[in-house]
Length: 382
Image (cartoon, rainbow, N blue to C red; front, side, top):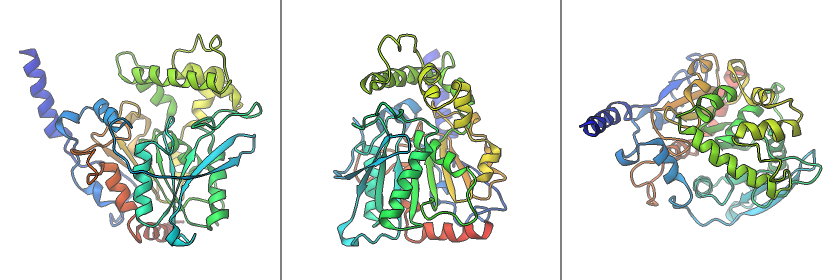
């Protein structure tokens, strides 16, 4: 009887709550105010398949073991950062464009992501099919990139690596061309870069626009609500990520098994190793530096679309309050009612002719003329 009641209320919740249009947060006096450039995808209802509506199912099915993806062969370029860190850029060119691209799409994966991952290759293929130059950052310490004795592992605050890649793309392919699509950890670095003060005349490497998937803004709040709350499944993800990160530290000779013995969760790892390596006193100082708040959102001066999900087990709505976007002329937050972390998987997600909800947004973002319209309209408000 109890099971029947539970199933009944979940079905009711699914059809009433999970089939709604995403909530949109933006300034009525800014770029998005008249609604013309808001992606059409946000104006329709979105709900995942009933049996995959749980956010943890969404994340599981978005994993590389279940997600189909195209075959892609990149050309890798290695860049040396200011502190001897090695950063990779995987590039997919289109020979028929003769090295002359009107736009560049730079993709930033999540914390453990890399260019061969299916969810990244699917985005790269979308850009490639639209005649964009597609590039993917490979973070320092990942996918075979070693960390020298003088260097450090990637941190949330390492947007200087992002600057380095953007400057390379400008030097190689031209100015005022690059646009960013970022996931989770990559979206944190992107918003940090964009919220820093820039000259009125932006440098040629500076991104034109950005599309961010599953982006927390207040890292401290997000950590204690999702990652460390007893009884919340985010704690399980915390244990799994911590285990994976500990292996990475040992592989890169940044720590020994004995020194990692007391590390049980990501905050311990950040507090003992990552924060001091980047000059922060501890995790509090580090998380504060990696966070963006209302005034930081207002500092962003290029068109930015953020897509989060209310049921994301890793990014809590309280870490990205909707009211922070009410005074931003350039940033719009779309908060769907379901989709998990980065996934947004529909029925038939693994059939080649189907795309995820986020990929539908990407598809409109890459439509001919859309980015130019965003850039041109943004000039009115700058």
